[in-house]
Amino acid sequence: MIEELHENKLRFLEEQAIKIRELIIEMLLEAGSGHSAGPLGMADIFSAFYFHILKHNPQNPNWEERDRLILSNGHICPVRYVAMALAGYFPIEELKTLRKINSRLQGHPHRTSLPGVENTSGPLGEGISQAIGMAISAKLDKKNYHIYCITSDGEHQEGNIWEAYMFLGKNQLSNLTIIIDRNYIQIDGITEEVIPLEPLKQKLESFGLHVLEVDGHNIRAFVDAVREAQSEWKRTSVIIAYTIPGRGIDFMEKKFEWHGKPPNKEEAKKALEELRTLQGKIISEHQ
Amino acid sequence: MLNPDIYLNQNIFNENIDQKPIRDGYGDALVELGEKNKNVVVLTADLAESTRAHKFAEKFPERFIECGVAEQNMAGIAAGLGVSGKIAFISSYATFSPGKNWETIRTTIIYNDSNVKIAGHHSGIITGPDGATHQATEDIAITRCWPNIKIISPCDYWEAKKATLYSAEVYGPFYLRFVRDKTPIITTEKTPFNFGKIEIFWISENPQLAIFATGHLVYQALLAAKELKEENIDVLVLNVHTIKPLEENKILEISSQVKGIISLEDHQVIGGLGSAIAEVLAKKGGNIPKLVMLGLQNTFGESGTPDELIKKYQMDKEAVKLSVKKLISS
Image (cartoon, rainbow over the protein chains, first blue to last red):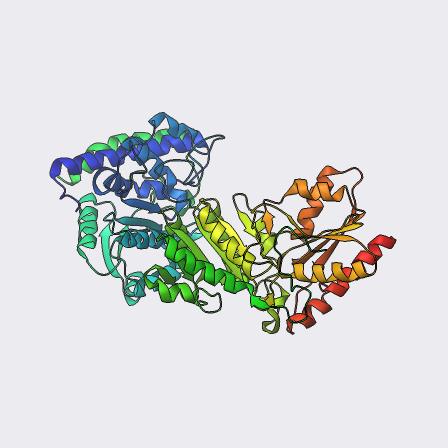
């Protein structure tokens, strides 16, 4: 069971989220290509996962009893890489190799390149199915680890996702929790203008899933939602986490133009300044 | 003559030769595997009976996963199982899997190095009356180009069974190619199955030509070889069950002994066995024999009986004999 979040731990997670954002900006600048908005928007959730929710061991990434964190929308991997580095999976210095030749940090994550990466992803819509396979395997082997699958909202336009939900309607797997990063942007614009997903919650509920909604930047609320999901003993839970793409950097927030590009040197400098001055504010919000 | 060392079916040239569907070899092997290894799981996309996965389903319901008509989801679930200590077999028609779900397999099974065996059924025009939509004739082409895959195209029931059993022993992705109809039993239970090897099924002392065949058409090649022998034309017939990795040395060794080579496959010649042999020969260069590729010639199949189809699309023994004679006189 995931521990309750105490005030000191919450502060720690919020600080880690800011560190994650800073390192994302630095690594994207160094890489010269990659996605900015999604990783920044998911920094709080990844902080919650790697430093509170997950049962894992960075020194032994293949520990059999570990929880599995499946990243379906592989393009936001910078946030995963940063969280993993901060957690001790590999040296922080290695973040600078993102997207470069001979790096373990591929532009989209590759399972066998980097220990701790549970699945290869990038092409969208494929994570939930893989998470289902892992959840079935855990049940067959009577293992207690939990499987989490992070998805984007845009990838919910893929048919594979709905094949997987339909499967879950019949084969409820309570050891699987799905998180949807609901940030309303995709490459070609706003999701509701490209191909609308709403009413998303009702659609998911009609598939027989247990659906929760949460502010994806409120770490306490998110941890509570995951705890609630785990107390659901029968159905698979889906947490719709409302996030702001580019969160923490004013000129990137809510701009779909920042979905698929990195900051240049000047923009990165500005972004880092913003993050560093915002630091105090974010903590005080919760005081 | 038939290779006497590998226990081939001695009734092979009888008109009443025993026939059994190649897909049954898959189904029977799955049941054996299920008994031997609790990590074997089988998935299907609404084709349990047709792919012969139903026998496993009846015996091991807790390890059988019905995905409904959803081949992408099936591939993804198998990928997740395969990296979690399971040996996952996915069973569907090859046009749908690895056809429809090609990219899902590429990303989540092949590049992801998951322990999944892809069983592609209803391959070739021999699928018959269902028509070209259900006749997988490009499946070798679309899987052979993948790194990190092993491909087996068995010639009969026994070879299908042995190939399926073998695939479970080796970690990693396999593509297994099966056909629907009853086909002649060429080998026996005792015939050795050596993965990665090309086996000589018909031997001649001074062969003028070599026929490299794969799948059920090995039978047509053998019929042709026997009838050619009666006309004093000596050929070799080789059974290429392992399409990848292809035993290149064997192809080069044989090619140095003959005037011409014929490839025979129930598949498009583009990207299939014929292409694979052409690649091997062209890479060697120099004095290489001419290659005639029998198979689908850049066209789709159609409805019909298996016999009618392999005749019309020139994959039967008559087509082989004709090609042999043309090659010899060229």
